[in-house]
Image (cartoon, rainbow, N blue to C red):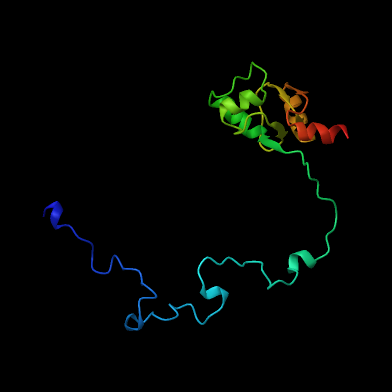
Amino acid sequence: MKLNQLKDNAGARKARMRVGRGYGSGKGVTAARGQKGQKSRSGVAIKGFEGGQMPLHMRMPKRGFNNPFPTEYAIVNIGRVQQAIDNGKLDASKPVNADALRAAGLIRRKDVDVRLLAKGELSAKVSFELTSASKGAQEAVEKAGGSITVVPAVNQKAADTASA
C-alpha cells in the first residue's frame, strides 16, 4: 500500500448539510429555521432580551454591598511552597516574596498582592514577605521556625480601600 492509496473508512467523514439552496435540496425556503421572525435571521444574539420589557435580572431586588474596588490576592498555599522548595524551585534560605513565588511558578501575574493560606504542610524554615496571610498559615510557618513579614499592598486599589 502506498500513501496515495490511503483513504478514510466509509462514513468516517460526513459532509455538512448545506441549507437554503432551493426546494430540491430538502432544506430550502426556511433553511430549517422555522418561520419568519428575528430568530430566523442571521446575526441574532438575544439571550437575555425580553422584547423591550425590563429583563428579569434587572427587575429583581438587589441586596448587600458590591465593592467596586475589591482587594484581589494571588493565593498561595503552604503545601505548594514546600513542594517548590523540595523541587529546588524556591530557596528557603532567602526571603520568599512575590517575585520569588513568580520565578518559582507559584503565581502568574507580577505586581500582585499575595495571600498565604494554610492548606498543606510546611516543614522548611522560611521567612515570607507577603501582603497577607491567614491565621492558620501564620501558625504553620511559626511552628516550622519561619516568620511572616507583612509588606504594604502592591495593588493601588487595595491600598486605597484599606486606608479608607
